[in-house]
Image (tube, rainbow, N blue to C red):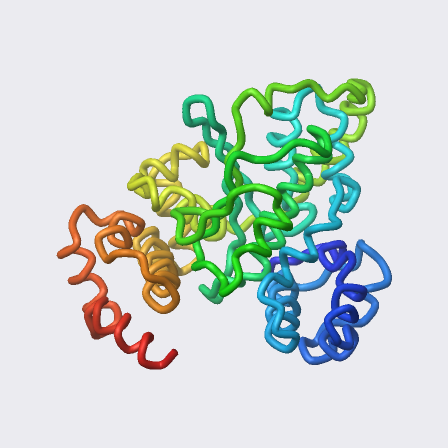
Length: 335
Protein backbone atom coordinates (compact mmCIF):
# COMPACT_ATOMS: atom_id res chain seq x y z
CA UNK A 1 0.00 0.00 0.00
CA UNK A 2 1.39 3.39 -0.99
CA UNK A 3 1.94 5.76 1.98
CA UNK A 4 -0.65 8.55 2.13
CA UNK A 5 -0.52 12.04 3.58
CA UNK A 6 -3.17 14.52 4.70
CA UNK A 7 -3.36 17.41 2.29
CA UNK A 8 -2.55 19.56 5.34
CA UNK A 9 1.07 18.96 4.25
CA UNK A 10 0.37 21.58 1.56
CA UNK A 11 -0.96 24.23 3.94
CA UNK A 12 0.33 27.59 2.68
CA UNK A 13 1.69 26.08 -0.52
CA UNK A 14 -0.50 28.08 -2.93
CA UNK A 15 0.51 31.44 -1.44
CA UNK A 16 4.20 30.53 -1.34
CA UNK A 17 4.12 29.24 -4.92
CA UNK A 18 2.52 32.43 -6.20
CA UNK A 19 4.98 34.59 -4.26
CA UNK A 20 7.87 33.03 -6.23
CA UNK A 21 6.13 33.28 -9.60
CA UNK A 22 4.56 29.81 -9.86
CA UNK A 23 1.04 28.70 -10.70
CA UNK A 24 0.24 26.21 -7.90
CA UNK A 25 -2.51 24.49 -9.84
CA UNK A 26 -0.21 23.82 -12.80
CA UNK A 27 2.34 22.26 -10.48
CA UNK A 28 -0.29 19.98 -8.95
CA UNK A 29 -1.55 19.04 -12.41
CA UNK A 30 1.98 18.19 -13.53
CA UNK A 31 2.39 15.86 -10.54
CA UNK A 32 -1.08 14.34 -10.91
CA UNK A 33 -2.67 15.68 -7.71
CA UNK A 34 -6.18 17.13 -7.61
CA UNK A 35 -6.41 20.87 -7.02
CA UNK A 36 -8.85 20.00 -4.23
CA UNK A 37 -5.76 19.23 -2.15
CA UNK A 38 -5.30 23.00 -1.74
CA UNK A 39 -8.83 23.69 -0.52
CA UNK A 40 -8.95 21.48 2.59
CA UNK A 41 -6.54 19.76 5.00
CA UNK A 42 -8.02 16.25 5.14
CA UNK A 43 -7.86 14.97 1.56
CA UNK A 44 -5.60 11.90 1.37
CA UNK A 45 -2.89 12.18 -1.30
CA UNK A 46 0.18 10.02 -2.01
CA UNK A 47 2.98 10.98 0.37
CA UNK A 48 5.57 10.89 -2.40
CA UNK A 49 3.44 13.31 -4.43
CA UNK A 50 4.05 15.95 -1.76
CA UNK A 51 7.77 15.52 -2.31
CA UNK A 52 7.39 15.80 -6.09
CA UNK A 53 5.32 18.98 -5.71
CA UNK A 54 7.98 20.57 -3.51
CA UNK A 55 10.92 19.44 -5.64
CA UNK A 56 9.24 20.66 -8.84
CA UNK A 57 8.42 23.99 -7.22
CA UNK A 58 11.99 24.48 -5.96
CA UNK A 59 13.44 23.63 -9.37
CA UNK A 60 11.11 25.83 -11.41
CA UNK A 61 11.38 28.81 -9.07
CA UNK A 62 15.08 28.49 -8.31
CA UNK A 63 14.28 28.74 -4.58
CA UNK A 64 16.61 26.28 -2.83
CA UNK A 65 14.87 26.51 0.53
CA UNK A 66 11.30 26.17 -0.76
CA UNK A 67 10.34 23.39 1.68
CA UNK A 68 11.81 25.28 4.62
CA UNK A 69 9.92 28.43 3.68
CA UNK A 70 6.71 26.41 3.67
CA UNK A 71 7.50 25.26 7.21
CA UNK A 72 8.01 28.84 8.40
CA UNK A 73 4.29 29.49 9.03
CA UNK A 74 3.42 26.05 10.44
CA UNK A 75 1.72 25.73 13.79
CA UNK A 76 0.67 22.84 16.02
CA UNK A 77 -2.91 23.15 14.74
CA UNK A 78 -1.76 22.11 11.24
CA UNK A 79 -1.21 18.60 12.62
CA UNK A 80 -4.94 18.09 13.22
CA UNK A 81 -5.76 15.38 15.77
CA UNK A 82 -2.04 14.67 16.30
CA UNK A 83 -1.48 18.27 17.33
CA UNK A 84 -4.54 18.24 19.56
CA UNK A 85 -3.37 15.13 21.41
CA UNK A 86 0.12 16.63 21.83
CA UNK A 87 -1.17 19.97 23.13
CA UNK A 88 -3.03 18.30 26.01
CA UNK A 89 -0.02 16.39 27.38
CA UNK A 90 1.53 17.36 30.74
CA UNK A 91 5.05 17.98 29.39
CA UNK A 92 6.80 18.71 26.13
CA UNK A 93 8.55 15.35 26.30
CA UNK A 94 5.23 13.52 26.59
CA UNK A 95 3.85 15.62 23.73
CA UNK A 96 6.71 14.56 21.46
CA UNK A 97 6.30 10.92 22.52
CA UNK A 98 2.62 10.85 21.56
CA UNK A 99 3.40 12.68 18.33
CA UNK A 100 5.91 9.94 17.54
CA UNK A 101 3.20 7.38 18.22
CA UNK A 102 0.51 9.04 16.10
CA UNK A 103 2.44 10.95 13.41
CA UNK A 104 1.33 8.37 10.83
CA UNK A 105 -2.14 9.90 11.06
CA UNK A 106 -0.62 12.98 9.41
CA UNK A 107 1.56 11.08 6.95
CA UNK A 108 2.10 7.31 6.69
CA UNK A 109 5.70 7.83 5.63
CA UNK A 110 6.83 9.89 8.65
CA UNK A 111 8.64 8.70 11.77
CA UNK A 112 9.97 10.60 14.80
CA UNK A 113 12.41 9.10 17.31
CA UNK A 114 13.71 10.66 20.55
CA UNK A 115 17.26 9.88 21.69
CA UNK A 116 18.92 11.06 24.90
CA UNK A 117 22.56 12.14 24.76
CA UNK A 118 23.61 13.46 28.17
CA UNK A 119 22.19 16.95 28.61
CA UNK A 120 20.94 16.98 25.03
CA UNK A 121 17.98 15.33 23.32
CA UNK A 122 18.00 14.43 19.64
CA UNK A 123 14.74 14.29 17.73
CA UNK A 124 15.43 12.29 14.59
CA UNK A 125 13.02 12.63 11.68
CA UNK A 126 12.52 10.14 8.88
CA UNK A 127 10.56 10.06 5.65
CA UNK A 128 10.29 6.52 4.30
CA UNK A 129 10.64 6.26 0.53
CA UNK A 130 9.82 3.10 -1.39
CA UNK A 131 11.63 4.53 -4.43
CA UNK A 132 14.83 4.95 -2.40
CA UNK A 133 15.07 8.64 -3.30
CA UNK A 134 15.43 11.42 -0.73
CA UNK A 135 13.32 14.53 -1.23
CA UNK A 136 15.44 17.39 0.08
CA UNK A 137 12.46 19.73 0.13
CA UNK A 138 10.22 17.28 2.03
CA UNK A 139 12.95 16.68 4.61
CA UNK A 140 13.43 20.41 5.16
CA UNK A 141 9.66 20.88 5.45
CA UNK A 142 9.51 18.11 8.09
CA UNK A 143 12.48 19.35 10.11
CA UNK A 144 11.31 22.95 9.88
CA UNK A 145 7.81 21.94 10.98
CA UNK A 146 9.32 20.04 13.91
CA UNK A 147 11.10 23.23 15.00
CA UNK A 148 7.87 25.21 14.70
CA UNK A 149 5.98 22.58 16.69
CA UNK A 150 8.49 22.72 19.53
CA UNK A 151 8.30 26.51 19.41
CA UNK A 152 4.51 26.29 19.75
CA UNK A 153 4.95 24.19 22.89
CA UNK A 154 7.90 26.04 24.43
CA UNK A 155 7.21 29.65 23.45
CA UNK A 156 8.20 31.98 20.62
CA UNK A 157 11.62 32.73 22.14
CA UNK A 158 12.70 29.07 22.22
CA UNK A 159 15.44 27.93 19.84
CA UNK A 160 17.01 24.49 19.31
CA UNK A 161 20.68 23.89 20.04
CA UNK A 162 21.29 22.70 16.49
CA UNK A 163 19.36 21.61 13.41
CA UNK A 164 20.92 18.82 11.31
CA UNK A 165 20.49 17.71 7.72
CA UNK A 166 22.07 14.68 6.07
CA UNK A 167 22.18 16.42 2.69
CA UNK A 168 24.80 18.93 1.63
CA UNK A 169 24.57 22.67 2.18
CA UNK A 170 22.77 24.85 -0.38
CA UNK A 171 24.60 27.64 -2.19
CA UNK A 172 23.22 30.16 0.33
CA UNK A 173 22.92 28.44 3.74
CA UNK A 174 22.26 31.77 5.43
CA UNK A 175 18.61 31.47 4.43
CA UNK A 176 18.30 28.32 6.53
CA UNK A 177 19.71 30.05 9.59
CA UNK A 178 17.31 32.92 9.07
CA UNK A 179 14.25 30.70 8.89
CA UNK A 180 15.26 28.31 11.67
CA UNK A 181 16.82 30.96 13.90
CA UNK A 182 19.83 28.93 15.07
CA UNK A 183 22.89 27.04 13.83
CA UNK A 184 22.35 24.59 10.98
CA UNK A 185 24.71 21.72 10.15
CA UNK A 186 24.76 19.84 6.84
CA UNK A 187 26.29 16.49 5.79
CA UNK A 188 25.31 15.04 9.18
CA UNK A 189 24.42 11.47 10.13
CA UNK A 190 20.71 12.27 10.44
CA UNK A 191 17.95 14.78 9.77
CA UNK A 192 16.52 16.29 12.92
CA UNK A 193 16.64 18.70 15.83
CA UNK A 194 18.99 18.82 18.82
CA UNK A 195 17.67 20.57 21.93
CA UNK A 196 18.48 20.85 25.62
CA UNK A 197 17.16 17.94 27.63
CA UNK A 198 15.68 20.31 30.20
CA UNK A 199 13.54 21.93 27.47
CA UNK A 200 11.58 18.73 26.99
CA UNK A 201 10.94 18.48 30.72
CA UNK A 202 9.02 21.77 30.63
CA UNK A 203 5.35 21.57 31.60
CA UNK A 204 2.61 22.57 29.17
CA UNK A 205 0.48 24.94 31.26
CA UNK A 206 -2.63 24.65 29.09
CA UNK A 207 -2.75 20.83 29.28
CA UNK A 208 -6.10 19.30 30.22
CA UNK A 209 -5.77 15.67 31.42
CA UNK A 210 -9.46 14.92 30.81
CA UNK A 211 -9.26 16.21 27.25
CA UNK A 212 -6.01 14.27 26.73
CA UNK A 213 -7.74 11.00 27.68
CA UNK A 214 -10.68 11.75 25.43
CA UNK A 215 -8.69 12.54 22.28
CA UNK A 216 -6.27 9.66 22.98
CA UNK A 217 -9.19 7.24 22.67
CA UNK A 218 -9.69 8.32 19.07
CA UNK A 219 -6.00 7.83 18.39
CA UNK A 220 -5.95 4.39 20.00
CA UNK A 221 -8.91 3.26 17.95
CA UNK A 222 -7.25 4.46 14.77
CA UNK A 223 -4.04 2.68 15.80
CA UNK A 224 -5.89 -0.62 16.15
CA UNK A 225 -7.38 -0.20 12.69
CA UNK A 226 -4.16 0.89 11.01
CA UNK A 227 -2.75 -1.57 8.44
CA UNK A 228 1.05 -1.82 8.74
CA UNK A 229 3.26 -3.75 6.36
CA UNK A 230 5.99 -5.60 8.28
CA UNK A 231 8.61 -4.77 5.63
CA UNK A 232 7.87 -1.05 6.02
CA UNK A 233 8.27 -1.25 9.81
CA UNK A 234 11.56 -3.13 9.48
CA UNK A 235 12.84 -0.66 6.90
CA UNK A 236 12.05 2.30 9.17
CA UNK A 237 14.06 0.72 12.01
CA UNK A 238 16.99 -0.12 9.71
CA UNK A 239 17.16 3.50 8.52
CA UNK A 240 17.16 4.77 12.09
CA UNK A 241 19.66 2.21 13.44
CA UNK A 242 22.10 2.06 10.51
CA UNK A 243 24.23 5.10 11.55
CA UNK A 244 24.59 3.64 15.06
CA UNK A 245 26.10 0.39 13.77
CA UNK A 246 23.27 -1.59 15.39
CA UNK A 247 21.06 -2.35 12.38
CA UNK A 248 20.93 -6.09 13.05
CA UNK A 249 17.89 -8.31 12.75
CA UNK A 250 18.10 -9.02 16.49
CA UNK A 251 18.11 -5.33 17.42
CA UNK A 252 15.31 -4.49 14.97
CA UNK A 253 13.21 -7.35 16.30
CA UNK A 254 13.76 -6.10 19.87
CA UNK A 255 12.62 -2.59 18.92
CA UNK A 256 9.50 -4.02 17.29
CA UNK A 257 8.72 -6.24 20.27
CA UNK A 258 9.07 -9.57 18.45
CA UNK A 259 11.77 -12.22 18.00
CA UNK A 260 14.09 -12.80 15.04
CA UNK A 261 12.09 -15.77 13.74
CA UNK A 262 8.91 -13.68 13.61
CA UNK A 263 10.69 -10.98 11.58
CA UNK A 264 12.04 -13.57 9.15
CA UNK A 265 8.64 -15.24 8.75
CA UNK A 266 6.79 -11.95 8.19
CA UNK A 267 9.32 -10.72 5.65
CA UNK A 268 9.31 -14.05 3.80
CA UNK A 269 5.54 -13.73 3.46
CA UNK A 270 6.14 -10.37 1.78
CA UNK A 271 8.69 -11.92 -0.60
CA UNK A 272 11.71 -10.25 0.98
CA UNK A 273 14.25 -10.68 3.78
CA UNK A 274 16.09 -8.65 6.37
CA UNK A 275 19.33 -8.79 4.38
CA UNK A 276 17.54 -7.53 1.24
CA UNK A 277 16.07 -4.57 3.15
CA UNK A 278 19.42 -3.78 4.77
CA UNK A 279 21.11 -3.90 1.37
CA UNK A 280 18.49 -1.59 -0.18
CA UNK A 281 18.80 0.96 2.62
CA UNK A 282 22.59 0.91 2.36
CA UNK A 283 22.28 1.49 -1.39
CA UNK A 284 20.04 4.51 -0.77
CA UNK A 285 22.35 6.04 1.84
CA UNK A 286 25.42 5.40 -0.33
CA UNK A 287 23.76 7.10 -3.31
CA UNK A 288 22.87 10.12 -1.19
CA UNK A 289 26.41 10.73 0.00
CA UNK A 290 28.38 9.65 -3.06
CA UNK A 291 26.24 11.39 -5.68
CA UNK A 292 25.64 14.65 -3.86
CA UNK A 293 28.07 15.15 -1.00
CA UNK A 294 31.70 15.42 0.02
CA UNK A 295 31.70 13.26 3.16
CA UNK A 296 34.90 11.18 3.48
CA UNK A 297 34.66 7.57 2.33
CA UNK A 298 35.51 6.28 5.80
CA UNK A 299 32.62 8.28 7.28
CA UNK A 300 30.21 6.89 4.67
CA UNK A 301 31.39 3.38 5.53
CA UNK A 302 30.56 4.09 9.17
CA UNK A 303 27.10 5.39 8.24
CA UNK A 304 26.42 2.17 6.36
CA UNK A 305 27.42 0.03 9.32
CA UNK A 306 30.64 -1.38 7.84
CA UNK A 307 33.52 -2.04 10.23
CA UNK A 308 36.14 -1.04 7.67
CA UNK A 309 36.44 1.03 4.50
CA UNK A 310 37.60 -2.06 2.60
CA UNK A 311 34.36 -3.89 3.45
CA UNK A 312 32.34 -0.92 2.18
CA UNK A 313 34.36 -0.81 -1.05
CA UNK A 314 33.86 -4.54 -1.69
CA UNK A 315 30.11 -4.28 -1.05
CA UNK A 316 29.76 -1.25 -3.33
CA UNK A 317 31.70 -2.90 -6.16
CA UNK A 318 29.52 -6.01 -5.92
CA UNK A 319 26.31 -3.97 -5.65
CA UNK A 320 26.97 -1.35 -8.33
CA UNK A 321 29.80 -2.72 -10.44
CA UNK A 322 32.23 0.07 -9.59
CA UNK A 323 34.20 1.40 -6.65
CA UNK A 324 32.81 4.18 -4.45
CA UNK A 325 35.59 6.54 -5.58
CA UNK A 326 34.79 5.87 -9.26
CA UNK A 327 31.14 6.64 -8.63
CA UNK A 328 31.92 9.88 -6.83
CA UNK A 329 34.30 10.94 -9.63
CA UNK A 330 31.64 10.19 -12.23
CA UNK A 331 29.08 12.22 -10.29
CA UNK A 332 31.47 15.17 -10.01
CA UNK A 333 32.09 15.11 -13.75
CA UNK A 334 28.34 14.99 -14.46
CA UNK A 335 27.63 17.97 -12.20
